[in-house]
Length: 118
Image (tube, rainbow, N blue to C red; front, side, top):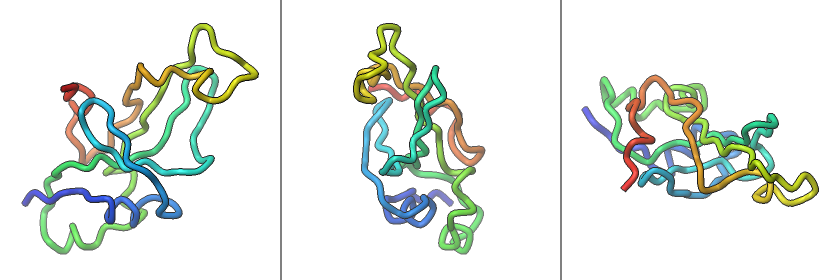
């Protein structure tokens, strides 16, 4: 059965439950807020849950979602380092917000999320 991943479910799975909705590739994502993004030089990325329909085996599985399910139902939404990055500037002066990539897609999600650009 297909069920919608909602903001409420994402809050159950994301650390701290605080976040915001962002849209990339024509899909809304609930992205964890705060200083919990990763910067590894070449990429800066966030953990996010796409707000889409996903197949579940049962109502119990759907209702039992918790933080331990996050890897299967989340993505790492990455932004590449700008070639002309301002080392002293704000985060968005260092990373290109116009070139998002999905660096990881959870095994319970469709593989083509980033191809849904509308």
